[in-house]
Length: 376
Image (cartoon, rainbow, N blue to C red; front, side, top):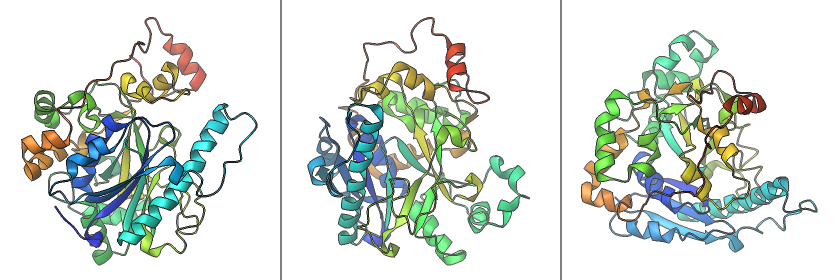
């Protein structure tokens, strides 16, 4: 329900053609952060109006939201000074990064005015999760990380997906029991593939409920389990950040990038998983979902490069339990409405990917996959 700025978390989210992802993303983070302040930046060329999703949250949920159009943030830090050929992939990317920097500043200033303290800077295919101590950490116990305060907090904290805990509960416990989080906390990312060869026994009942009562095809947190592994930086790349904006010296400075928005307070966005209180599941999702975004750089081969990571699975996360908690909070009928069951439809592409007879060996050789890539 309604929470004060100090008892909730805000999010800055830039999007394009992703309304179908918003349903799950908002519902999940409303529960898990708890998200109560959301600023969405509608990027250039976006034809989806996020308000179509956001208005479902208008009545008695306490979610406050703002939608900022690209013209209101794209030039916040001046015109993009790219190369001569703006159609090149490089200039396309850096033009986007320039707009993203403007959005980070605009969103942060708005959050500051609202009195919000903790803000995440993320995308709607990334889901914030507790880094609970589990079997992945057993062999790390006697390493250098065993004396790290975040590692010790993880080892002894009882927060997990089975209780009604939030990220803010963990932050508060950390502040009282160990030490306050740094002003800018890095969340390593974990890249998920798009195969469904693993089913977690404990999640079977929730998967069945999702298939019968919700739009299973659009629920990445329920559908996908296989990932590149926690210690494969090459696959998952730089992390995202959770920021205490009350401790940022200058929120209007030009951001380094979305991974390190405040250079003075934010470290290089790389952190060992054992030392992270939280991390972000980064979902590739299906080919149809991937190609739905109007982005000329996206291709079948590009999707294949992301879709077949399966070194590890996420069964120990128990992330599926969020949906049960969400139903308990709102009731099934309201939960279905908020998750867009009446609107979300399976997106179907006219192109099949991978095409019949695709040469995976050639692809592996080209991109250098080793232990974490298995297309069969």
